[in-house]
Amino acid sequence: MRVGLAFLVAASAWPALAAELTVELRTPSGQSVPNAVVSLYPGGGPAPLAPLRGPFQIAQRNTQFQPFVLIVPVGGQVAFPNYDSFRHHVYSFSPAKRFELKLYAREQDRTVRFDKAGAVPLGCNIHDQMTAFVKVTDTGLAARSDAAGRIFFANVPPGPVVARVWHPWLRLPGNQAELRWTMPARGSQRHALTLKLRPPPRPGAAY
Image 1: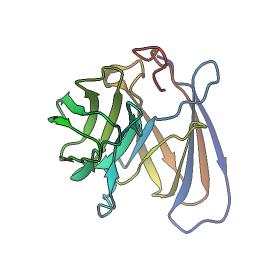
Image 2: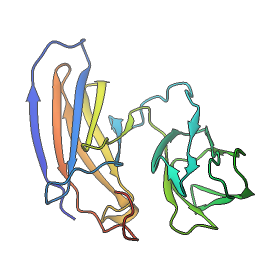
Image 3: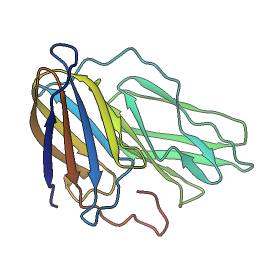
Image 4: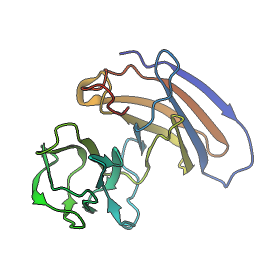
């Protein structure tokens, strides 16, 4: 696994003791990496969690989970509505959250509370091709990369920051890389990261 880092600091007028951060994620071939989660730990510790702002939801639609990756703060409750015309059986064997939502039909809903930080892979016991992930975070500075592989953070505290980059197919233990940098007291900063990913476990699976 290679993590290449390109660093750019651009001075501009921002509120005192806060800076903006943009992270861009690419594969070695230059392909954008969506669905990566970057979690920031200013000074090495978690930023305070904001009040739970849900609702959080992973829908079952067209024999897929939507979205593929959902970020939830510790203590968040996620709804799993079924919009398909057939039944689903949602489960996870993750150490962060082990649960089972047995067969339920269209227009029915189930909910699960996630009370421990970590990555929670999801599956359907009826449809093996269905895969998704709940990334439960213990820091208030966590975001998912968009289709262009970008993440934006506003008002990041100055000083040393530990950044944890997670993606389900990242070639590292726990599918996670850890980086460190220092945020200025004001201005903006941009980091371009190169991530080496494993191929998805089945053809056509999402990055």
